[in-house]
Length: 195
Image (tube, rainbow, N blue to C red):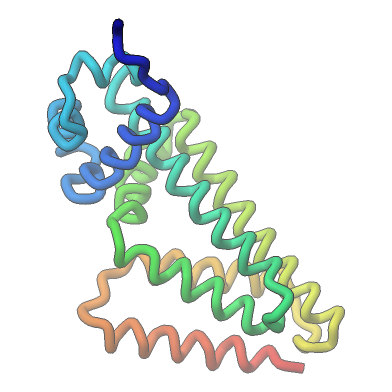
């Protein structure tokens, strides 16, 4: 009797392994053979689940962004934190994530090359960025309404905070001390919002 394979579970396993390969080798230096080797299966088996490397990458990035979205939503909905603490934790989580993998660098690599094209991955990245900015803006607006944050332009401040996250994850940091210094500077900025 043939072995019954859970199609979605196997697809998820391939995505998880592909994340590691893409993060280590980069998008353009990765091929299906690298992914199949990491998964311990043949290339033809990989093709039963995905059309090509681009499709695997699309699902890999989608999975990564979904994980980040869950983290952001957990922080935003944490009632034990003040609005300023939520902003600090949000930035800390997002800027610490890049240490564990190079997905942010991959996103930039792809974004630069595909910027002129209209494709689903770029649209997904734009939507995620916009959603994150809205979450940050809402936190600031709620903090203002709760008299925790002084009245400021919440949209402009959300753009500033998002720009910090983006630059922090894209610029190489030579060591953990540099990271801590940058985060400390950011926390001073956030503390300056206190009403």
